[in-house]
Amino acid sequence: MSMRVTRGVPLAGETTLAIGGPAAVFVELQDLADFGEFVALAEALPGAPTVLGAGSNVLVSDAGCSSPVLRMHTEGVRFSGEAADGRVLVEVQAGHSLHDLVDTVVGHGLAGMEMLVGIPGTVGATPVQNVGAYGQEISDTLIEVTAWDWALGRRVTLDAAACGLGHRTSVFKGSGRWTLLTLVFALRKDELSAPLTYRQVAERLDVPVGSRVPPAEAARAVLDVRRGKGMVLGCSAADRRTVGSVFFSPELTPAQARWLHGEGAPVNHFPDGSARVSASWLTRRAGFVLGGRLAEGVRVSYLHHTLVADEGASAAGFTEAVDVVVRRVLECTGIRLAPEIDFVGDWPQRLRPAS
Image (cartoon, rainbow, N blue to C red; front, side, top):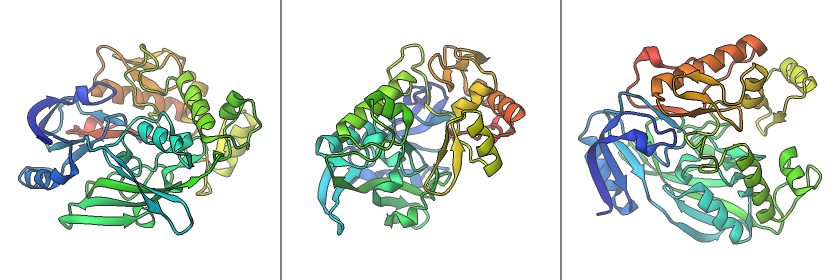
C-alpha cells in the first residue's frame, strides 16, 4: 500500500533531534495519487494535519500530537521543459530530499541551487521558510507550487509571488492552510556557479570572494564547510541529534550593523535590504562554549555554536536551553534571537520558548 496509517507512533524516531511524544494518527504517503485518501481521513479527525518532511527542523512536544501527522515520502524529479528566459524547468515531488535534488541538478550541468547542498530536509519544506545558505535562496529559482488548500478544499497552484517569500518566511510559515505537493524550479544551464559571496567557501577553493567556479566545485566546497561545522546530518557521531540552525540570523539596525562589523562579526546583506548577523557568532560572543551543557540532555555542539541533544533530552529541556541562549545573548549584545525551528504538537503554554 502506498499510504500507511498507524496510531500512537513515537515521533521522536521521526525527527533528527529524536525528541517528542506519540502521534495519535501517523500517516506515511508514498504516492501523490493517494493524497485524496489522506484528505478524507484528515477531514474525519480532529485538528489540522501536521506535515513532516525529514523532521530536520522541528521540535515535537513531549506530549506528542493529537492531530493527524503526515510523513511525505513522495519522490521524483522531472525535467519539464524550458522557461521563457531559457532556463530549464524542474518539477519535484514534495517528499524528495533537497540534498538529492541539488546533486541531481548539478549533475545535469544546471546552476542555481549549488550552494544549498547538504541542507537536510525535503524539497516541500523549502518554501516554508525560503530556505537559503551561502548566498542562495529558494526564492531565486522557485516558479510555482501545487498545494492542497484546506480552506478551499481543493488543489491549487501558487506562483512564486503568491508564496510571499521573504527572509526565512513565506505565507506557509506558521499556517496550516496548505500542504505542498509539487514544486517547479527554473535553473540555468551554466558552466559556472553563482558568485561565491561567503569567505569560508571562497577560501576552501583558494579563490577570491566573488569568483565563479563550476557548480560541482562550489557544491563540494560548501559541503566541506558545512561538515566542518557539523551542519551535515551524520557527519558527527557526537552531534548527530541536531536541527542545524536553531535560531534565525537576526536583522540589525544600521547602528548595530556598524558596531558588529567593527567587532569582526560576519554581517551579511540580503536581497530584501536587511543586514543580519550569524546567530552562532552572537552565541559565542555571549560566552557559550563548545560542548557546554545548557539543560538536561541539551548542550552546545562540539563543532559549532548551535544546540544539540544527548541522552536524557526532552522537549521541555530543549526549550529551556533555547530560552537560556535567548536571554544571555540579549543581555550581552542587546540583540534578541528568535527560534528558527518549528514547535510541533500539543504544547502547554508555559513551555513555549521566548521569542
